[in-house]
Length: 438
Ligand code: CA
Image (cartoon, rainbow, N blue to C red; front, side, top):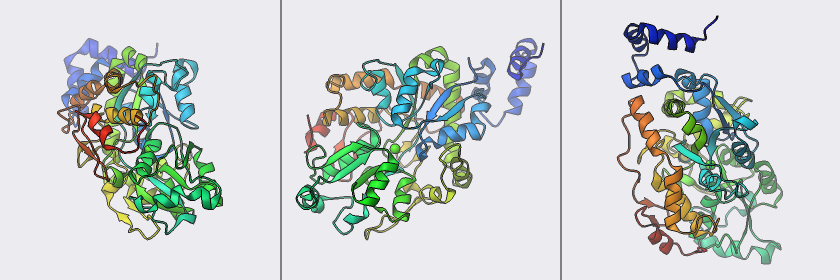
């Protein structure tokens, strides 16, 4: 009978004990001893089906597969599967891998919390576990070229009347798009409009539209703004479709962006594989943030299997180089682009509960999912149910990670307009923002 390599190692480890242990540990000596201990007991499965959307947020999942980090940690058959769009990803995780769907993957926030509570799954809750943050930054607000010279920058106070009076001059409201309602890209553009005195629910039309359709609308004069992620900001400017009003890193430096979350039933059934998954993704995140690896990262992500774009369009954002247009100075700072492992505020990968709480507080601000996210008390409960920062810590310790945060809160967050979010007092944030539905 032929034994697989894993069966062989498992059997051999049992029969020869310390001798083989020493040999294997020696072969993998560059990792901490904790890493080998995790492998000795072996994950419960060597596979997981993870969904991704072809934007820079997904790079750690792609790299974990392509650079062998999944395999190194015993998940050699892990699959990284392109999702047609966010609704498809949601539907596929609701089905689960047993039904041909996915076990988890990349999410805008707070999609895991909304799936967990049934808020976006026809009241069919599927318990979810947030395991780590994938990235920070890499997103922005793009504006159609017809609005050049109207003051549409980071602060649009001076352009508010132009936007509000748009129907009088153009016969329709100023129209803005994101790719899925009530999550990151919707939140970023709402924050930006509201900070400038424009009510995103009353003064403009704001809706979910597929990216290709949005860009076509920006070309032909039927779409005015797009809340989007790299590489779209680069393409919109380089293809002369429009300009960038702001990058999200200018709105909120080192803000939370997208996350890895998996069905809670998968995590409960596979505790060792969950740790292996996290260790692999953490190693991939470290690899992604090494500037020496960025050229290879771009080459891998640009391929047909993943983003299916020319490598050239990924290079500027991955070097932190953005041409904003409309008279704004260009940005040229590695730390202004998408980052995956460490930023000036500490760990990117660690899933701070304080960030989950901001997303749910912002949901309350805009009156999203009122029957589910009823108040701040319920918001905190949902965060405690979904956020598994404890599993992140276990995996980080096993990997010998040095930048493990001491608290589940990153502390006070400050936005470009001076508004602050103190996770210890989210009501004070809701009191500060002028335009709200609460
Ligand atoms: Ca995003």
